[in-house]
Image (cartoon, rainbow, N blue to C red; front, top):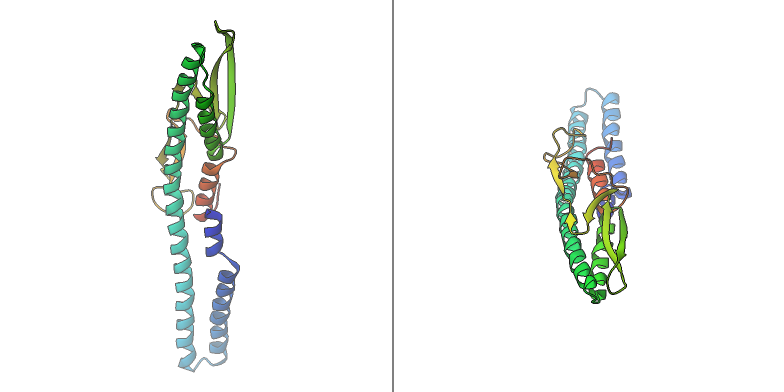
Length: 212
């Protein structure tokens, strides 16, 4: 869980450590101010300053490592969304062909439900089953459309793709190079309202220094 990883880096003990280092740094300055001729306090200030610099550098390195991990996970989740969309569209065809011939497709429908459920964990999904009339066996002719982020990603036997593209300009000065934004393959913006992909992006961009 990325929230837990972030909390480990920025937990209460870390804040306490920072407070301690800052207190020692300012204390060294106070002692030097009271004893400006004593070189001991000059060296003490240098030492406390190095401790403070080390703390910030170590924390920054941990946050950068987490942002790299999150950025890579964005790509992984984009690939998973595309794979799920293709598999769902393939199952739509199998289900349709089976039922139009009067067969049962319960197992295939169960498999599709599992894939749709997983897709809904990655982003907000809307499942729509359209009735197109009645088949010769008396059952309804049905075709499925699935929306992802408010846009159709599967329309019966067709599926759309999303893609990860490298950000041209950094949102935050502290961001790593090669941050990925997501969009539809035609360049249209994806508007995710929920899901793992959205939260991964939000945590990653927050780690870099804040969101727009």
